[in-house]
Length: 549
Image (tube, rainbow, N blue to C red; front, top):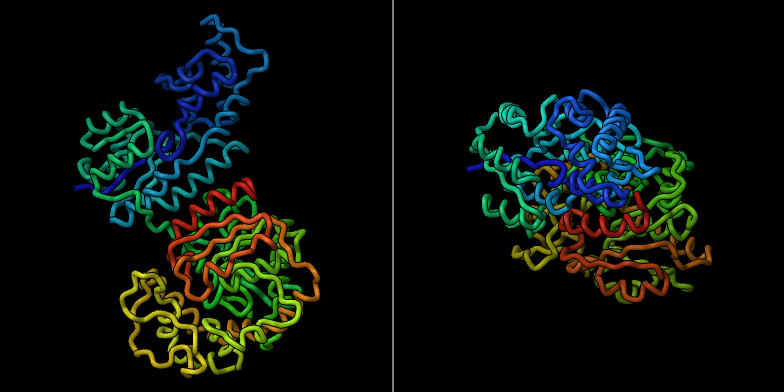
């Protein structure tokens, strides 16, 4: 029955502006609703109305509203506090305003079910420093939603019914095909009078319950968040101090969060986190680490040692003039972020790892020596040591290789094909004995998987596999440092069904990483793609504590 769901900005996707103003009025010792009534006046000639319609900016609004407030206080016999000024009042309001995360999450649920989503609201042209957070939020909504209608851009504002009619015309839908989620009951009634299904409620769960009744969607189940693609991020290159050129993508502004992928991946493995981090107010930077993606692939095995890999991260920070950053890694990328934090503690603000825990170097034996007596699920690492063997096996049929490597490790897998990294040398290769036709990757779309296949068909597996051929060099570097504790705030996200990097392997990390926060997600090895919404929620709780926006 319905095709489009429209969301109001204030009071639905964002905190209610009127409720926030009422609270701040009390904080400033003002009579209840004094400023709210002035601001919300239906008179089209008021400064607030002109700002909402885009006739003036926030900077121009402030002195005009100050004059209006002064005149109204005199007329009503209200004594304004001596220190009161309009600019401070609205700055305090802005500090209270927050995104409504439950409803923002619902956008993905709706789009996954086939609905178009529209952001429609009375929004002002808030320029200057105060506008930064609103601009960031609107950018995220423009990226996420299918349609966007802002009063300040089209010169129409609610309760003028022409605002709705304008949106209906631009979306080419009938009123009966639209649900409008409103902050106020009066606006819901106005929408209904136009033939739109208008709904409103006092809280987010109430709104979602009504939406669920109309759409049949279970909003308690987290849907996959919006992913970025190659054409929706900024692509850059820089030259490291070792003389190779590395590629990275970025999105957003604010405190830097550097994302380091694992094997066999590239920057695209963070596609669900990049736009989310940008919306939270961070500068998300995803690196194609050396040997991967569009970065250089130097010829020598020793070019892929941890000495170079951790220096690459610092070189990236130096190039972008970033004094300190938060590092987040997965798989091999986790080893990079742990070791970079250990080697360059003055440059790392906080560190997070997916799947791979931190373990200090053994004082006497490198990892190869420790694994050889009983490698178990790490036998693949020993298989990777001989140059050219695993490389040739994977390059022979990239599609088949990646289907097996990205296989589902969770109990939901009923195909009988599960990545087995034990006994690889004995059976003659990672893919030995498998059927030619393997199941599709269950946590990637065909288009996403094809992007991985295209990338590895072009670049091959040789350079990424060279990382595994530096385990002894990496151990020697760690031992030479003499330090083995990480004191930065750290996050360890284990994966319940990862059959290679087992969650229990991270037990006891607190001895070496004392400022550790933990979480566990119900997924296999490919955490960012298998549980993207759940991971984003974990990051949204941890990041503001360790790197406030």
